[in-house]
Image 1: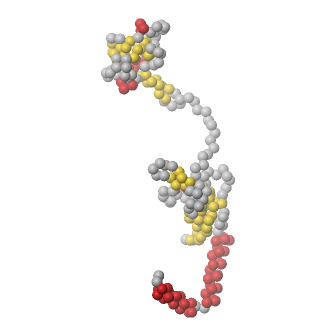
Image 2: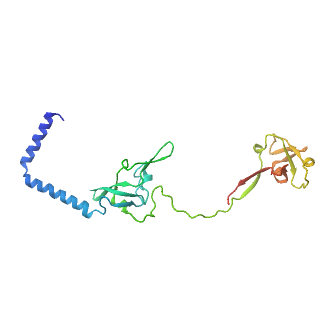
Image 3: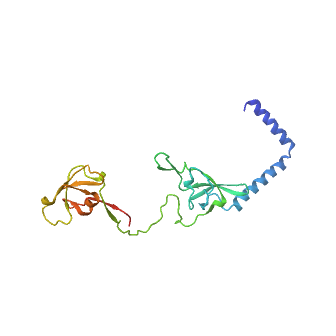
Length: 228
């Protein structure tokens, strides 16, 4: 606004004030301010400085896109300001836990007290702060340790892809001798159609896993977890 515009604006305001009864206008403004102060301080459910926490459903209709993770039920904060709009009270809330999430690494970065935002929330989403045990964002619930049974293992014979890349000596499970030389055979690598060439005959991998073990006693297959 240049000097001429400022002078023009002053003339307009001066003309309006001349047409008004100054004392009556001042009284009117004071009355409006007093009514506003009374509404926000006496009748508002929360005052500036009050401790509050969020109720359920604040993000139910898609509110706060991108930062909805901050508004879990039970999240706590402090009332920073109070207004009245659309026939209901609206509060500026500074949350205790306010952070942003890196979209690339997924890391969480906490804002300092000076950096924290003030979020405008209507009265229906707030309630007085309750006990300290109320859940908040990022607070892990207390869990009792419950012993779990060991996982159940199931033996599965090798597939062609599981076969060792070098020759492997095996022996039948039923053989009880202390020396494996007379009962060891070379497993030919590069088996075909789920079979291996063993001691002059073709043996299926299923049979190999059920009836044969490696020379050191380990099975010709693998153990996998199948639950509890």
